[in-house]
Length: 326
Image (tube, rainbow, N blue to C red; front, top):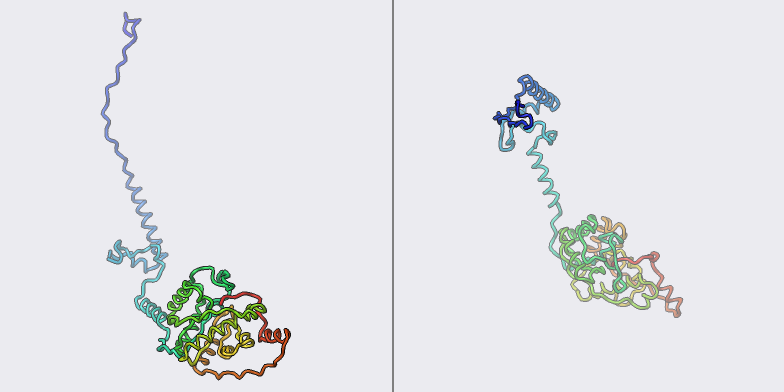
């Protein structure tokens, strides 16, 4: 402080503002730049040695429409794959087309030949889809089925029968009871180049005395009468076969007059394996060479419940303990 102004406070002056010079970033030494470039070139050389001479040649390629960035794509994600081979690609395409169209062409429809088609146990294994009971009959719980629900080999075997005989298909399965299921079956058949369904058999009621004794026998006998009624309404049919997982020997054992004999004109499938090539051979033979009608064995006339029970139980196989789809 100046003398004579001991009681006054000194005045502080603000420093004059300085102009700030623009900040400049230091450039790395050339030696660092050279070392980085050298490292990059070393990495490229190592990569080329790992990938072989083909990668080195590809790295020198200029840009092109197929390789807009040039360099041949050396070191890319898919560079380990072999280069495309047009001849092999064409051969693979031709093989796929042959597989798609390798099915023999179907002959003209022969309406004198008929396949009575069951579905469950013939085209798809029993129990493979969930079922519900409607009016005492087991039907799919879903309103529609898909191609993936069916056995590919079974569908192919059905087509083989049609291809060798020209036979038409009449749906005798319980699946004919609803329009949605009938439509689904038709869609699946068309996907395998199998002709549309010609018709469906009528729906009858089971005989009360058989239903009370054994529902499976009653079911089988009812189906026989349904097929017989359809045949009576179509006298032009001279050859037919029933594809079913029901053993029609049960129906023949309790057959009524006017109902056709079924066992000798049927293919009895295993309900878990479905229609096999052996079944195809038998079905084709039945359609090409219809067998004569069997002569019924004379029945013993007797009265009483014992005789009725003996008649109802005369079957080739034991009765199944399950309810199946038709």
